[in-house]
Length: 105
View 1 (cartoon, one colour):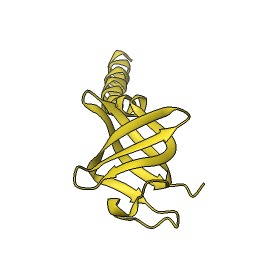
View 2 (view 1 turned 180 degrees about the horizontal axis):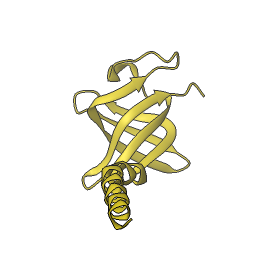
View 3 (view 1 turned 180 degrees about the vertical axis):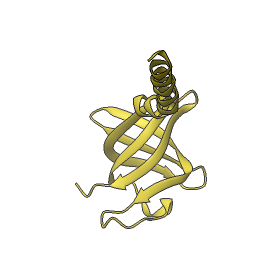
View 4 (view 1 turned 30 degrees about the vertical axis):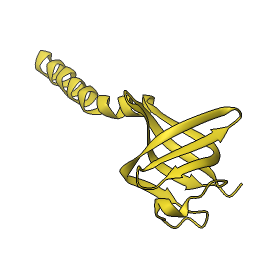
């Protein structure tokens, strides 16, 4: 009986450790929807504004960029005035965009 209990405790501890990074990323993940104000293709940055808030994002090299028609696009296809939804994380150096989708609003 004691051996089965110890095995269950060990299995629970391993599962908790395996899931910990996923929970940490989920806690640090955010979404911001607004109008594109500035796009710097070479610097891979974008500035988006909504309701008085203006956020500046660094765009990951492997970020997903999605057009209104759900096709993937290059950063140069996103223009000032487009309404986008940015999925990002807060990092020590700032906001890091992982996905940018045109909403078509």
